Amino acid sequence: MKRAMTLAEVLVAGALSLVLLGVGLVLLRRLGSASLSGSSQLQLQLTTRETLRKIVPMLKLATAPNSQQTAIYTPDIGATAANVVFCSPEDLLNPNPPAFNPRDPFYILLQIRYAADKRQILLEDFYAPERYTVLGHQVSDFQVARTQRIGLRLQMERQATIRDSRGFPKPIKFQLSDSLQLPE
Image (cartoon, rainbow, N blue to C red; front, side, top):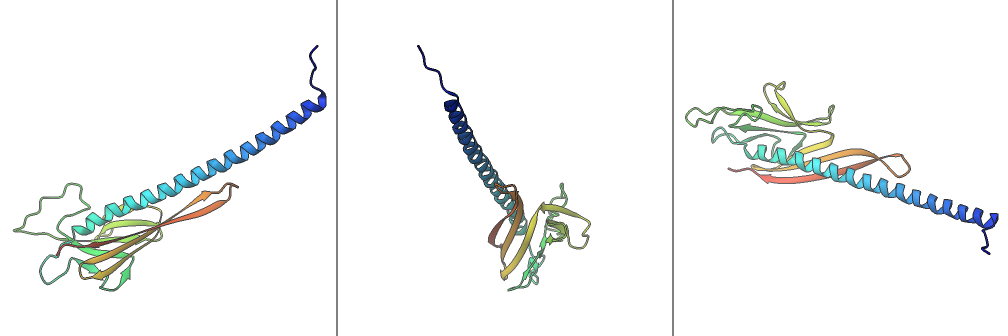
């Protein structure tokens, strides 16, 4: 004859199962929150690096129109600003620019600037600001320091808001710097 479980044993087993299920759900929720937080931070880092990878080659194209001028107009040496104005032999805003003709050179004055109201970094024509393209979104700060006549240090900060394990908003920041030396 087989012995069946009593009502007390069934209730204890059910209660233990519910406790273990509750602990498992809490751990699963925290694991999901940590995974989401990690992927959000990684996405923030990748987009910041991608924006700097767009900016640096453009600045390396900076060329002085003659021997009396420099390729970088602002900021001044030793100064820091939220923009950099430079001279380029290519119109970086035109998707199909004409070929550079050394006999009849045409230089364009461009500006990379931080638009704080839109939280964007823009590449724009210095004399026609309505001609622009967006290089980066969700930027909380952008600084350009001119370290020497042909040296620049770029610093960018991005900020995003994620939800923590309890569902509350939590801001995360990522800051990236890059230094470059322009060709003479």
